[in-house]
Image 1 (cartoon, helix red, strand yellow):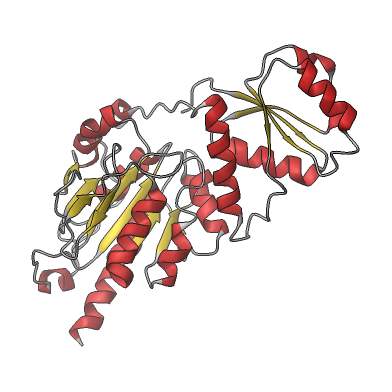
Image 2: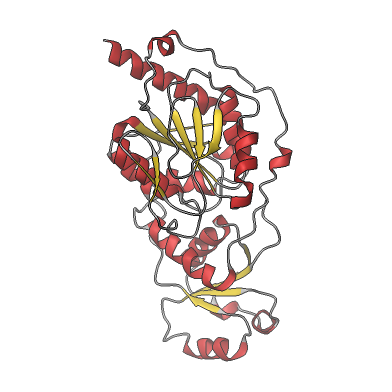
Length: 338
């Protein structure tokens, strides 16, 4: 869950823009405590100093010049002026607009604090245990993975990813790379927890690690990784772009550009919209993009944002996503056998 984090006030002169700004800010995990048009702002809101940031978007600044002068002179709270109208949520321009807004907010208030609560992921028998299809036993396992799937997660993600992995048969011929928004100090603990109750190997995917079937590599937080033709991770020598580390968008893009239709992605519970920029590009290269269903998420902002782009072809609970992946791979192998 998020701790008591930055408190945001929103001022917009249209109801729609106020709603879009509020939705975007809340989706990133911030607390919106004021959402008002300029004419309805109470003086006490401006002078109390209880907020951490004002986000202001006015279509008609000339109409509200007196208000702006009063705001600039009268509030002790920093003010961020939004850079224009938000596109519709289903517009391909929306994810980048939201990402710019968040990047600017970070300069003022920093990221919301997220408690991953790995200690609460107690051992539990999964709701289902998927048997190994006979087709999987016909696959010759070589040094280069045939299929690479990205698992993207943020708030609430570890629990969902663990259930997903616990349901899968160990013989599944897929290599996983997990992009989890998390502090780097928790990576090794996360690796131990995720595969504690299943047959997958799980470790942090530092520079030089090899993607392989039956293995979950966790993307490092400190630097971006790309992939060689054989599936080996290599540091780019640069930090991840954007507000989150690791960047789910960059992991999806780097996997997709290397493995094309041999790649896929699943977006699990989380805040924000990380994955919504690279998801459509992966779909364009022939790779499926799936997402956890909103009602099964601790926080559905992230999978919902990717769904809004139109690139998600399947949504389900972690258990149903596991079933769908096993069947997808089974059918893929059958096509190769004929």
